[in-house]
Length: 119
Image 1 (spheres, rainbow, N blue to C red):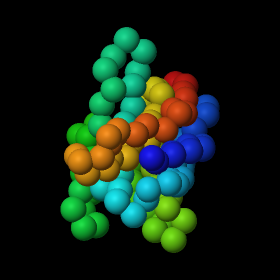
Image 2 (cartoon, one colour; image 1 turned 90 degrees about the vertical axis):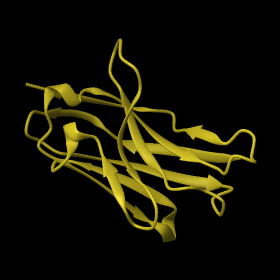
Image 3 (cartoon, helix red, strand yellow; image 1 turned 180 degrees about the vertical axis):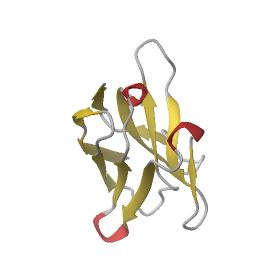
């Protein structure tokens, strides 16, 4: 089992910044690289940023150059620094963590945190 607790988010003006945090606990030794997703009203949940192998990172085209994913392994925490925010970034943001396929369940989500960007 893995528990993910998110913090941060809220209301920002266009051009502003916010930082999200996601603290993981439980079976963290087996965790695969973590990532962030968002879901806007009426839309599917989609990837925003994720660690891949090693320290490599992958970003959605819409956030490249504006968002940065980082982590503090000592705190088992992943961050999402969001700069130059746009109204279209408005969504609920979810932290995601996966365990290897032989675990069940093996896909975990944080509780979600609302990010609202006003124009």
